[in-house]
View 1 (cartoon, rainbow, N blue to C red):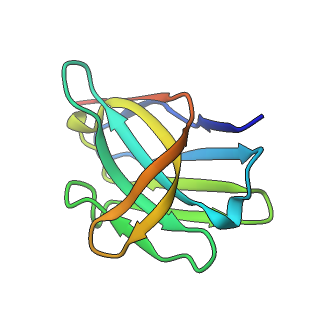
View 2 (view 1 turned 90 degrees about the horizontal axis):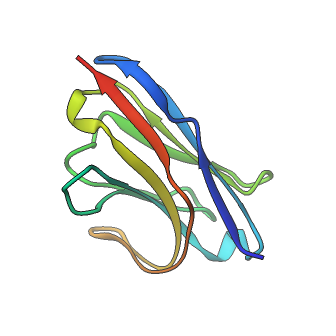
Length: 124
């Protein structure tokens, strides 16, 4: 079975950091691109980042560029999202997903697999 399990969320003060993990299984990790998304209550889902697991190329949305970093541990089939300088507006449920199309300028598309989310709450 395909699984993407996001974990590492929690409650943090503004200015703090969290590292999310996306543990995957059941599909060829090196053939997919892994993206991170978030969705806050009453808002649309927002794409944050994407990484090519074969060479580590990354894409970031402007809203998180310079604060969030995504990287992979291919031996563990796991992708991480390091979130620094967190703001209250970063509060959301964070998801990871696996895509088949990569674009250096616009990120990943054609997401085939989605995981359950992890809640991140940033208090002021």
